[in-house]
Image 1 (cartoon, rainbow, N blue to C red):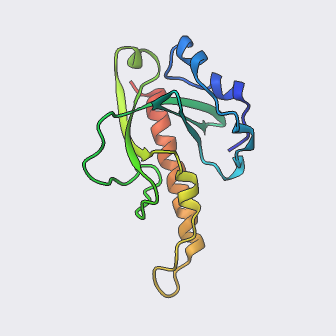
Image 2 (image 1 turned 90 degrees about the vertical axis):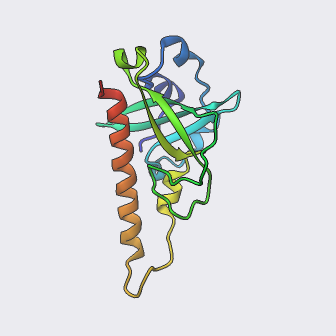
Length: 163
C-alpha cells in the first residue's frame, strides 16, 4: 500500500456522511505505519470503541470504509474472513458496514468477521513451520498475502459498488 496522509485517509471514506467523515479520528502515529507491508490500513476509535475504520487501495485509489462492531460477542471463536488465519493469535469480531451511496442511505449493510485490531497484514506474513517435508513456506505465505488482498478487494468493491 502507498503511504497516505491523514487528509487523504479522511476523504477516502465512501460509506459515511460529510459530518461523519469530518468526525473520523485519524491515529496520530499513522505516519509511522509500515506502508509497504500493509494490504490495508485499519484502526479503532478509542472514544467510540465499536467503530472501526479501514482503507485499502482499489484500482489504485484509496477507498475507506467505516465498520461497526456487533455489540454481542460471537458464541464461538470464529476465523477471520479476510486473512483466514487458523491459528487465531488475536480476537475476531463481527463488523457490519453500510453500503456506499443510495443503498447505504436506505439501510443496506454487509457484515463480515475480521480481526478485531485489523492485524491481517501481519498474520498473513508470518512464516509458519513447514507443514510437511518439501513444503515451501515462502510460497504458502505469498498465497496467503494474495488471498488477503483478493478478499479485501472483493469486500471493498461490494460495499462501494454494490446495490
